Length: 196
Image 1 (tube, rainbow, N blue to C red):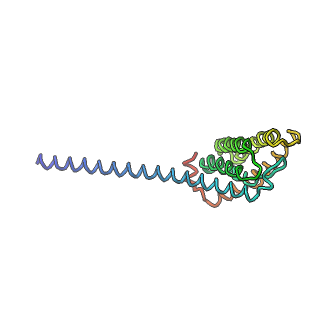
Image 2 (spheres, rainbow, N blue to C red; image 1 turned 30 degrees about the horizontal axis):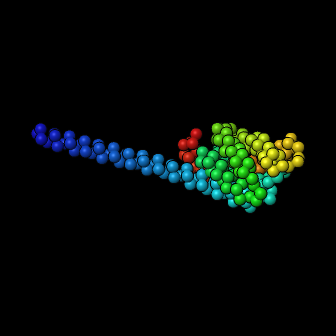
Image 3 (cartoon, helix red, strand yellow; image 1 turned 135 degrees about the horizontal axis):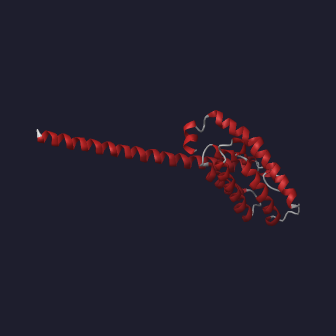
């Protein structure tokens, strides 16, 4: 009888160990899937930002600009992967748009990075999500235009025109994009709750 109990006890321990190992593998697989999903989302957002910026390049530069790709600045509402995605997309887009200087690549991209992070923090207030992109770009881009490119226009004028362009891109194009993505279910409710 003791031998039987000893056998059952070791079998039970073996089964528990196997179950624990399976649980660990499942946990690792789900964490890997989340990491892969994050990387894929960031890469897709970067690619779309770059392509849209390049397609609309003539309207994306200068003191009076409407960078249509800035509509994507609403995506941090759905996923934190939009933060690096928009940043990398902005770096790539600014690198390819003709005439871009290092100051525009660095400071313009950093403005997008900061705006995306702030937008992510404001995700509980849907209508405020695009606001950081509007404000930061209205402040940073005119400085780059004035001191980097040497535009003669008044700084306050460029802040107004860039700010209006950002309002157009982020609110006129971005908010409908946000509602369309929300309705489409591309980012499922489960993903949004994971990110909150």
